[in-house]
Image (tube, rainbow, N blue to C red; front, side, top):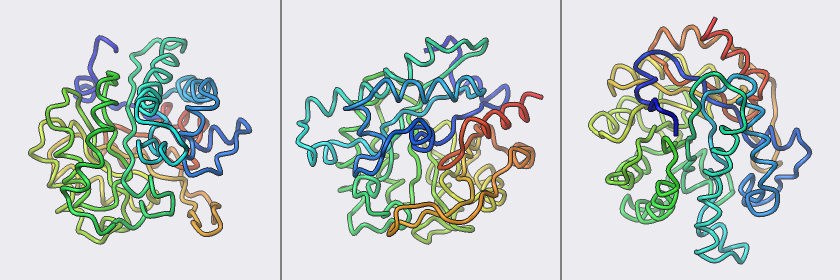
Length: 301
């Protein structure tokens, strides 16, 4: 860990997040056509994950987000990996990011965010873009808590509760982080002014307002065009720093398992997001080191 906490850094200025882990791994020639997605490389090629983190630190990112988005006990069990080894792999995701921070030649504090994807990510069928899994809040909390406990024990700087499509799942996650001793940010995947499950963003962001563990709230894995209004709403409703890291603007076709359309993401957009209250700024799917470098230049220039 650095001497300065991420929460302290947010109070003094913007912090640059990394970009998409999967696109960086693919650009290095790794096949992610697997239900475990990037988490498969925790088993097979962990050094590749460290290299991906290093590429983002070199581009100007202050935060590395671990390759644990799709890493769950249930998902590993489907590959014949038992609970003890699964816990070791979850902890390894944090250590790989920490090792990249140690190896990076940066003259600034660097932090590690442990990625916690939604229940739908484990299903690997595009459910994280819909929500509404047919599970209760209690059932979702029981799913998330064991993984959160393991990741928290690995001592990341923050838990990234990300790509959350449903306010009910956010309720479960906010319950599950209580008492873990690690701060968290909460970011929804959105469409327009609603969560992917259709709830108004005002209601969704309000859930985090009274949760002490949450140091930032916002959106990720959405179109850049959906960010502007969401930032202002999050800042007003939650009263916390806002986190923003959208996709490139291309659209994921879950049936064809490919990205379609054109990129609409430009680093110049971050100026408006900052003015509206965003303090954690980066990219998600299809946003690579070059774009993160542009964001770093924009916020530090």
